[in-house]
Length: 384
Image (cartoon, rainbow, N blue to C red; front, side, top):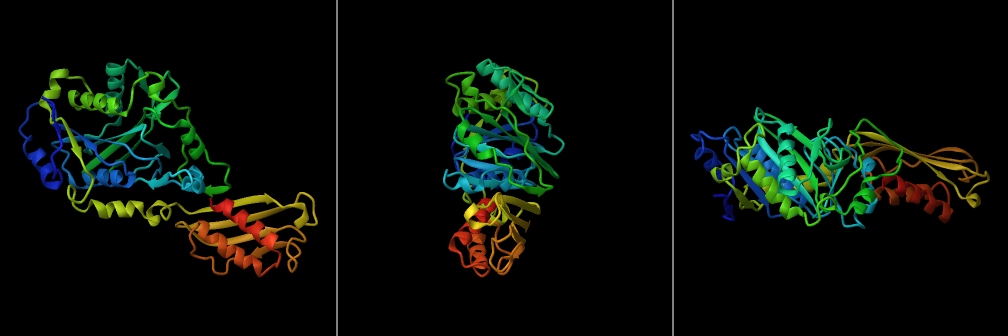
């Protein structure tokens, strides 16, 4: 019989017990569905990483189900300033996170279900995992989802309902994906669709696709019903995704509620702090150059249609160099050309912190408060 275990202390020792108790099983590989009781994106990413680092998946597979409060999660090798409106996140009470796996940026809220299939490296097969999810949608809700050539789950051949990414190591691996149950699509599209921001980088770009909520195809479907459907399908499937029948569920280890804290998983909170740090979320951004032009108000310049250009080189999320190119007559003691504002700026975070320093540096070039504020606003738009 499938159980729903709410017991504590399912950390390293309990996971070892899961493995040792099932080594002699002659049936499919023993499986457990873990459901995180946290909606903190950093705690859930830390839990996923803790399991990946500490558990022996050669004898036991885990499907981790979790959801978060509003968050944008970028891939390990992405540039957050290119993927999202970084400056708007705070106002919308959306946090930015960076995960350990590659792939593109995704939006999470309470209407999105996250699934992490944790296996040994040899047992890793994302197509099998996606087949399990597609089978669950068909069996429980009558929805026909297919896997496209990018390993996305789509409905009606076009609408993306799930993105996918993975981390492959030794001896373990994981494949994680999302399911859009009832996500705030307006919020998602407004946050992820960043403007042409003038960034030049070798960072991984996201691939935009039309998306849809599963609830729009099946009214009444929600995250809770998805958890049950996908969890049961995982438990009744073998390692190749083949259905073993409903009776197979009772021969597995069932559903377990887990709490991502140090009490349950020793050392997890240190990992959470690292994942939440500025150094990880922004400092791990691949080096890039940003170049933006702004129309100068006519009263600040002698030339109609003049442009001011801001250029920055950013290394590890910090300003390495910066220049502002101004039109004729914009600066009283520099008729035309490049204005150096680097003094005091090297090493500063590519963030609002840089704006005040630029404003102070430019004041030394020109005493006009209007021009100083204009330059500062241009820089603010660049760093956001």
